[in-house]
Length: 110
Image (cartoon, rainbow, N blue to C red; front, side):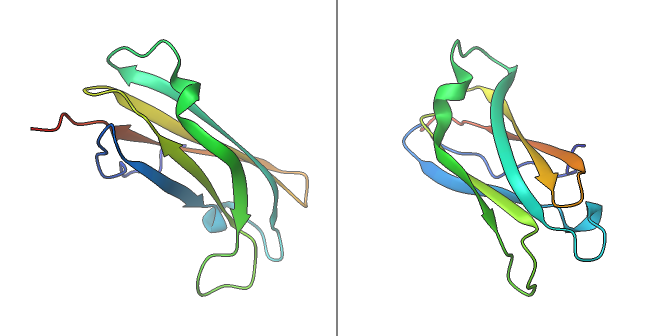
């Protein structure tokens, strides 16, 4: 499911940790048990988009809650003038699987 909002554009030299909170998908006391992130190209050209994943994904407990409902992933080295799709697929302690995605554009440095 598209989250409805794109990430702020990034420059080639930047590295960021980005994430999603799945709280709106989850039942009471349901938490994330695992997450897998992927990168693909929406517009432009990049022959190896998965190379922009930096390190393993992490599960998090977002501020204001006591439940592990979020996941974050490091990203970097994107190619200029390419729009990427960042997708997280999570599994929960109640046997459910959910997916969120958004876009990020790598802008040229002027």
